[in-house]
Every structure is written in structure tokens, then in C-alpha cells.
Image (cartoon, rainbow, N blue to C red; front, side):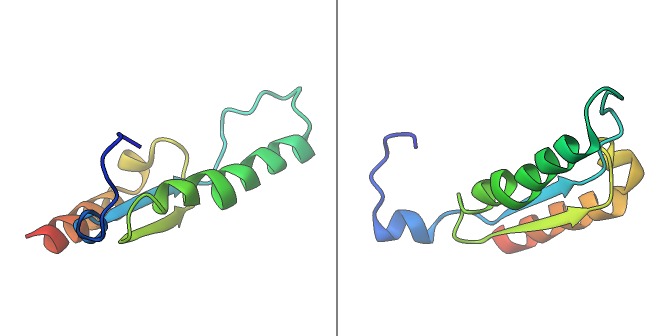
Length: 90
């Protein structure tokens, strides 16, 4: 937290937040066992990314079958998320 008081009014004003979660790990070194890579992916998708979502009272996670190149692999999803946040704040 930033040290700001967490009043009901401050919570109400939290902006919408969309967390786009990529699930494809194309850069896993071959020496990493598949079981360990899967455990890391599960931690990322089911625990760490949802923690980001909870930073806003209007947060949501969209899981995308993509690498970290999501803007070039799935630009329509990125554009849609930006549009959704913009529409919710204007």
C-alpha cells in the first residue's frame, strides 16, 4: 500500500483493473522438469495474478493462451481490455 487511508470512499473510487494473464511459457529451459514448470505456471495463474486483481474492487483476470508477446499475438484482447477500462472510467 501507499500509506493512504483506506476509507470506504477510497475503496469506492478504485479504478477498474484488468489483468491479462499469459499461460504459454515458450522460454522454459529444457533442463527444467515439466512438473516444476507446471507448478510455476499454476502459481502464476492461480495465485500471483489473482492477487493483482484484488488490488481493485473492480478487478478481473482474463487468462489468455499466449506468451509474453500478447500484444502482437492477440492484439484484439489487449485492445478490448483497454477499451473496457476506458469505458468504465469515462
